[in-house]
Image (cartoon, rainbow, N blue to C red; front, side, top):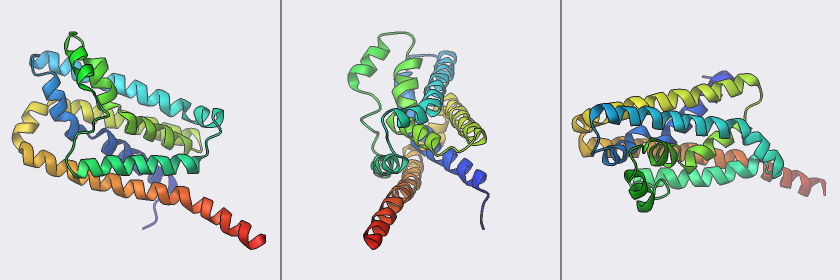
Length: 219
């Protein structure tokens, strides 16, 4: 079945952002960081953290094209780089490993020394990590109209709303799914992300190889 280009772009935005933010995968990290807080405080941190991450991703989505133009970066090059980064992230998720790039022990300790840890490390880099920020920029570069930008912003907001809801019920979710269930879901998300990564690399390499082939034939 052939989907409408806008539907394809919407599905790409949503699945890419959801797998990279990985709410279920980072829920245990959120629980560990907020274990000394009560339920009301934990929910407040979840809301502010998700809001912070949404703001960060929206900003990078809106200025992504400008960054590309300023540094003369081609979409093909960024797709190849992003594909490699996403594949690595997906592989780590498949192996059920929490990414080291999300937060360092020093950042966690600094965050715990302050009452408000919602902005950092919860909002960034736990929710809005390097992979999600890269994805927002890459998807922005593929936007061809204001409708595409609207779809991307909607995908960001929906992803962060889901993240907030997962964090809000993280304690109950962890009990119901158990450690094994959480790992299984994380691995499934990793496989999906790796498939998306391979497609990004193919999309980036194909135009380059086509141009080289045409140049060789014409030469």
